[in-house]
Image (cartoon, rainbow, N blue to C red):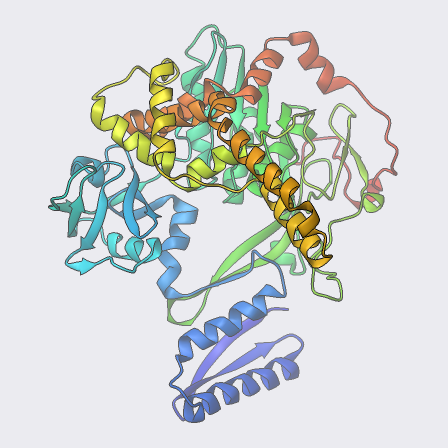
Length: 568
């Protein structure tokens, strides 16, 4: 259904819209009239003063929730955040802000940003912005105060770590560009690595330039494209990233919606950089949307090997349209299909359950498709990797050390004592320094709850409700004490994992985001798997050519199967 706004008529202080519709005219106009009447009556007679704008936004949000989670109303106040999501740019000071208890502090200043130039460091508490106290405010409130037009100034009152004396700093806002390729480089003698974090503007160009730089190394044999945790972004940039490895005029994605204007086939627009180099694509459950277009296309074309865990499963395309008063509507216009003809959408929002919940596409309804070399792939559930790995699960203690900011706060004090460290990947905490961290944690009244604690609590509640607790009290107390004693060893038992998190955080303080990624790669088991695969020609070729029979029916070729020739 297409909606055209042709007039805005003011009646009695309220705006009524006149629409031209191709269908559903009566139902839409009737319900718009009811909605306006409800808002008018509430404004005139409700016991308390209402906020019409907020009330209407709540109503719009509730309406859109019945569709899919990607259809959103974006009011004028949130437009800058939306633009940042698509461009990677905003006006501000260039720093991440976090809230630890009631303290708002710098979590990470960006390299060469106004924040870094002004001497802000991670751990600096922000007390006020332009004289506005931050007491009781959250990170969103602070973000709005820090962002603004490039070239404008602002004054921060800062309390540095280990200091009791606030200082004032004046910063000049700049256009902050968050790179979608924060790191690329050689991670072994012959394997290159490219981390792509978002499909914002110029993602394709940045990946292209990264590969050009890597190819200057005469030993380059293969490249890892890391899309783990990449939530997606612009469809055009997904096409451009594929174009780095695939030649001009290769079909990448087909979009199909209710309106014919959204139906089109997207081809790669330029010459590739390298159509032969071995490629491994790293993915996980956080790889979504545009990431899945790249991943699925590379798999369908047998152009690279996918390593990791099943991707998110978002096969829907969104478009934005301007509304009145500088608001925007982002709404789903089509489904996309990758070259084999499959759609990887995992949830069927069009057919909700009676309770409003959404079900995954059942295996029984999934169809089989063929890749360029004839390998079997499936639709309806994200991209299944060619090499499946178990996702790393952090220990309960490691998660709590992070969420309770003990790792962050310890590293803040560590940095004050160490002006420099070795390069990322080479730096490592000594056993004595880790022991110092253990002593620090034990002095912080650190507590956390494990699944065992939760189950024991449930057992106590069950025995109490069934009148068994008095008979089992001594045994329960002993188990509780034994668990508490065992948890004291968690800092030692999980030393390697916790030590790695400490080293990652320390590297970020000296070498920023690029340093954190390099430090993470030093202990990255999935990257190690990719390196080994790219160095094994026989296995690499075998994976891309081995055909395994399908136990499910194949998709009807007449309904959009694999095109035998490149689209013209």
